[in-house]
Each structure stands twice: as C-alpha cells, then as structure tokens.
Image: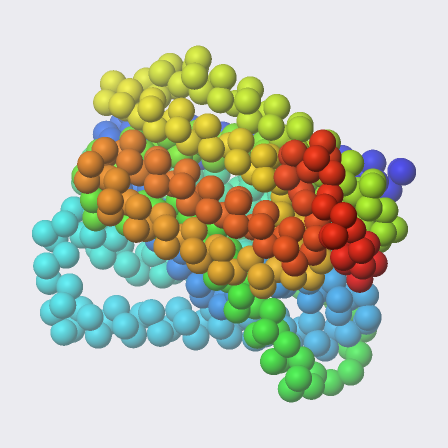
Length: 455
C-alpha cells in the first residue's frame, strides 16, 4: 500500500506540474493576442503545431518506446543495448533533420516556394523554416530523453524540467518582445528564435540527466541484429498512433489553415487550449488509477480490475460534467480576455467540452489494450479517426465555420472512443465502458476475460 501511495502521489504531482505549465503557456498566448492581435496568435499556434509534428517525426518512433526498452535493459543490466538504442535514436534525429534541410534547400533553389507569400500563414512558416527544423531537432532530443528517463525510474527528471522551463521561457521571450517594442510582423520570427534557444538549453539538460542516469548500468552482452529489428517492430506502430491521437489538434490546425482565415484559426485554437486543460484533468484521473490497474491485472483479480475501472470512469465523468458547467458559466469571460473577437468561440468551447464525456463513457480501452500488450490493434482505429477528422473538416467547415471544425473534432473522438471500446471487448473480452458493471460481462466472454488477465 505504501508503494501504491507513493506512485499515486508522484502521478498527482507530475500532472499538477503539467497543468501549471499549460497555464503558463496559456498566459503567453493571451499576451500574444493582446499585444500583437489575433492574426499573430493564429500564426504562433500554426508555428507550434508544425514544430510539434516535426519533433515527433524526427526520432522515427524511438521516443515513444524509449521508456519500455530503457526499463527492460536497465533491469537486465544491459547497458550496451541501452546505449546502442540511444545512439540509434540520435542518428535518426540527425539524419532526418539533415534530410529536411536538403529538401528545403532543393525547394528554394527550384523556385517552387516562390508563391508562399500568397498565403500569410504559409509565408510565416516558410520564412521561419530553419528555425522550425532547429527547434524540432532540439524538442525531439527532449522527447527521447524524457522517455528514457521514465524507464530509468526518473519520472520527475523526465517531465519536470521540460514542463517548467519551456513554458516559463516562452513567457519570458514574449514578455521581452512586448517590452522591447517588437512589432506584429516580426513577432513570430522573434518568438521562434527565442524558443529555439530555450529548446536547445532544455535538450542539453535532458541529455546530461539521461547520461547520468545511464552511467551505473553495466555493459552486458553485445547488440544482436535481432534486437535492432525489435526496436523497429515496436516503434513504427506507436509513432503513427501518437501522431494520430496525441497531436490530433496540431494536424487539425494545419488542415483548418486551408479552410479558415488566421483570425478564425486563432479563435478555434484558443478554444482548443481551454479544452486541453480539461483533458489534462481527465487523464490525471486514469493516471492515478493506473498502478491499481496493473496490480489487479498481475493478480488476475477480475472483479477488482472491473471495480477500479468503474471507479475511474465515474470520477472522470463527474470531472467532465463539472468542466462542462465551468465552460458554460465562465467560457464567455475566459474568451473575452483574448479580445472581443474571441466571443464567437463560445459554441466551439461548449461542443468540445461536451466531448470530454466520451472517454469516461466508453472507458480507458486503449490503456487496457496496451496493458495486455496489444497496442498495435489500436492503430486502425487511430488512423480511421484521423481520416474522419480531416474528411469531416472539408464537409462541415465550409457550411458551419469554426463550429463545424468543433463538430468534426468531436466526431473523431467518437470514432476513437467507440472503436477502441469495441476492439478491447472483442479481443480481450473486457468491457471497460461505464455501463459494464451494471449490465455485467457477457457469460460467453467470461473464460476469455480470465485467460487474458492471466496472460
């Protein structure tokens, strides 16, 4: 119990720090909007979206599975394997970054990019292309090191520095730019260069922390070729799943940039940021219960497992309901802080916050599939939800504007939540939906459930 209490305490602290960092980023975006206007805020949100997606792509999935392999190799005393994994991740980042530089250089020489100035947001991204590549390389290093540190039982070092340094640094850069009188046309370039400096300092700190954590691990056996193939087998599905789900709204903003003007994009982006703050809270509920999920699974305690999932779902649904009421009451005031034009984001806010209930209703199916070592089966649903999001944007946004964008986002969340619930029930026999405890598991699935829990 003491160990479980410690884990729960660590989870609560980590998510509390994350929530605080998100709040600081929110303040920075508020300052950008008030000082340089909604157009600059929209350009900034697009800049960050591209930066995040590039950073996820550069390590080719090794940042996602780093925690798994670092934990395995550290436990087995296989330091040589762990260091080989780290070197391979670094080569991916350097190689793909160099490839991006070559591609951008060829495009510039060929003249294909001469018409980027015709579209404001595209011109901003292209004008800052080298800053984006440099920043993405640094951020990807932090992602890889963070995953490794989690596996090496250093969660505070994995999340703490990045969660604190990056938001505070961005806020400092924005504040300095405002006080120095930087104009709106130069704002994104100035913020971008400041952000790159922060990201590389953060990356260097994470590299030092990771090398220090790896130092005590003994060398172990040489690296077999089969192990390198195993890295790829784990990494490739996970990077697709991560991009399609965790970075859904970054992709969404890029798609919407083709359909909305920059001011509308800023309104939608701010509404999304409010929504993501609430998502942190929903995720924290399941994170706090995660150690108990693992413990019940290890004991093959079917009743205890179902009871924990039911408790987590009810708490998360209650929090989702409170969050919706908060958005209903405080939404207009919160949006008005960014300027009078942001009031049109109120319907978007309510639609997105209504979508918070989807995960508690259908339950943490993707978490259970990962727990049972079947994360790859979530891939078709993840890709299907992303395809639905993109397709529905082109149908709904021309008709309903940013409200259509919100409806498309919630539809994608329905596809993910319902699809993962169905896959989890079909493959593992475990029903994690909120109604499962009242209806009971289907008798023909009982033996399958027990067998899965004993795997």
